[in-house]
Length: 411
Image (cartoon, rainbow, N blue to C red; front, side, top):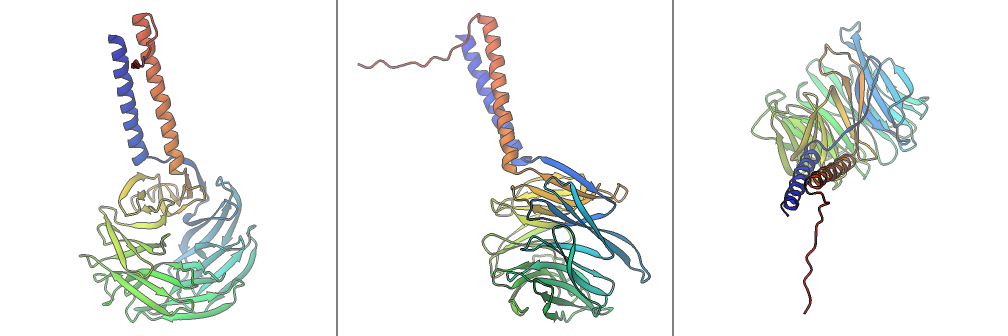
């Protein structure tokens, strides 16, 4: 009888221990790396998942040109679903943005020293058309999206003089023909506005997000979100700030409820700001100590996946509370949610400029898959412990322990 009681205690302790282990792993490290790939001597800038389940990656390398600025060259890498290279295109300009078009092709947005541009390539990397202009000197691209009508929109900075720059928008149709362009004057100096991202809306319009300063100085900055119609006319805009005057938006995304999520920092801590479809703030969260959040995407459960400085991958719930974070062996620049619910992170291999600099692509398994694996391992471990306990009892008593169910006799 005593040995049976000891067995029951061993079983209960084992179940509690492995249940606790499952809880800890599932909540704070419920993810696993499926594969890691590195490519060439470039820096990874952006990544999308293509319609065939593979990936399109943009990268860049820098050198000095005759103007004294960094002369960037770009690369577009197409891989299969396992990250294996299918083809590589090299360009004489920087292409930080890549957009998946409805007809399976990829669109690149770029600017060299004296022009902005689009290049459309098909699934095999063959150029279909390009749109560029040399009339906007020192244009600096910021974001590009495909609009709901099948066209494309590019937003850039255009330098008016050494102290002033405006926001320039250009809209082209699906064949690259320019439909309209518009200059949004900041009315301030070069520090007055900074566009960090753009989101296309279902009605053909778009949203710009970034940092705005009425005074034009770094010490007076606010989170900023502006909603435009399909012709680039401003509908409304909102400012968001806290006790700090050094707020800076680094990324924006649209949420499943039609609202928007802003990621940024105040120079000390990272911040998340959630708005509704009109840009009205719903909540904000401070990610203490994480100074920069570089890329954000919404997950299938309504939460968010983010890459930030210090080589961090961070997971937040739907209300902006941190669920887990991990340290990556790379310097990340962007993250996406894949079709299977996992994550892909692109950036530069290593955490330091002294490390080897290559484009690095990391695929993480879906969290549900990772947690299921942990659950299976927990059940197996529990069964093993129970089996060992049974063997110990058998050796001491000479009989197999049996759990008996006491039945009540009916009158």
